Length: 350
Image (cartoon, rainbow, N blue to C red):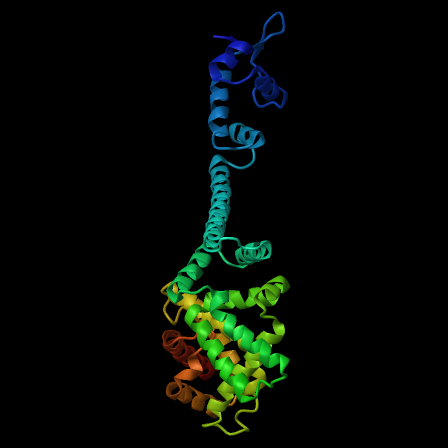
């Protein structure tokens, strides 16, 4: 059975122009020609065309279709996986857009006539968040905001205003008003964002995005001010138990590593979420970094470090902020005990 191009087009629902194009690029060449030069397609050509149409329904490009049919390049399994990955990205982008539109719709309904600046600021804030957080993480933050019955920027607005006032007045982070505000700020952030993973990304986003600093009013100067004041709050607690000599490394180390501590807590919580035991190599690798920060804060002085561990048991206020929880501490201590045991065994073998 031989079909002319017009008959083949009619039976398959394709246009003659499309079949001409397939012939031109070598995707489907007719097996024969009539005496008058007309293209003639046999049973194998028709079968090949049905394969082409089936693959095109998978949204493959003509080049990918040709590679699959001709057995060149990547196999069909790889190509399909690539298509699935691409569709997953499209779905994620569509769902992100849907989330933004829903949130904007809610804002428009809540404000009868929101001004353009407010609307654009909200849209920009949402766009920036999308750069640093996955859709699941954004949904987690929205759930936390729902539980707190307040959006993050609204929840923190009084503390941002108070911090700006102290900065304008040239108040030192060592002064009581600064330390009191730091306590309130850290507690407020802990309530609305208790997950160290989200807190770490939120801090990074503020550090990296000047436009977000302008929108929120929380710039590098303010973040450093609150961090320094938080250091002083902790310093005051430690000073009840430690000498000035034992504390001499603490201030500089804690300020330098404040954000690193949050990242460590985030990593530990992720390992816990994966149900990894404290002796798992990935957990141990994270705890080695934890130990390095801890040693840096106390000048590698073992007696002081042992004292600090007991201080944390007496002073729960030291665990507030940075996403640190009693559960994380207990898990880390199990892992640290294993880490120290392994270190002693290695030393004994030398």
